[in-house]
Image 1 (cartoon, rainbow, N blue to C red):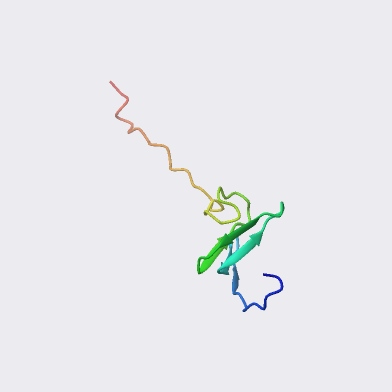
Image 2: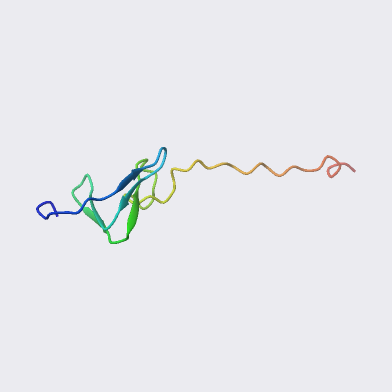
Length: 78
């Protein structure tokens, strides 16, 4: 890939989210392994929370806990 003439790739940065790259892409990881995707666009994880790193699985999104179920005031009284 480095010695081949390449067409420009579009890269979109999303605040608090992934980096979206038009594909196909090859990503060289820190340990030298190469992850490849032939998809038309991929989301690259920047927070490292993804279980499918280097691909984003939306783990960066803030999770909100559902409010605890409230017991009606009358329910617990005899």
